[in-house]
Image (cartoon, rainbow, N blue to C red; front, top):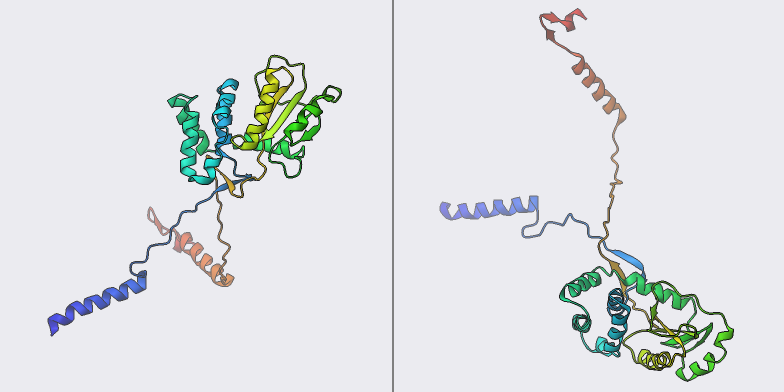
Length: 275
């Protein structure tokens, strides 16, 4: 009976020790703090960001890429985000080397070209866009979202002021620059973009217009735009205070000073008695 009682007593002692220290089997609470930095604008399209990356490799490659992804956004609704991402890389791989593809992956991971896409989106918002239009053109201060009205707006375009163009504009290759400027606001890879792009590119070849493309998404994403590559410092200060009796602290300090003041014997001299 004594031998069987010993293991039971040891187990009981172990349970008491666990209850006193920590709940047995319960993981310790993590001490690390995770912080995410969100931009003020919503998440932008990876397809638009990839087009901006290719635009830096050359204007001709940019327009060739747009021809390749004419209606690519239909796969965005059907496939998963990962499959759509791989499809974008596959389309971009037709114009980039293996090294450039790796750089594109890195740029997409840190969302390096999201501010550029948002810049065009903000310019479109300042126009402002015609109500209910997913794509529209601006011809010397006149706007329309119907392709059959472009010819009408071009007739007296020369009498209106020309628009201001920025350094990073996407200009369709043209021979004649002394013609009206048509700015298309649309989302590449959509049917509405293809509809306008077909009409405008034909007019450029006839030397009737200068064709400029600016990114515009009618319904931006509802997701937040989380940024990478930024250091975040969190300064955490405890605001808990304890009530302490000042009299006890003063008495303790006086006692400490007396103890420190006792030098004791120094080379035969007893300074405490001499004092």
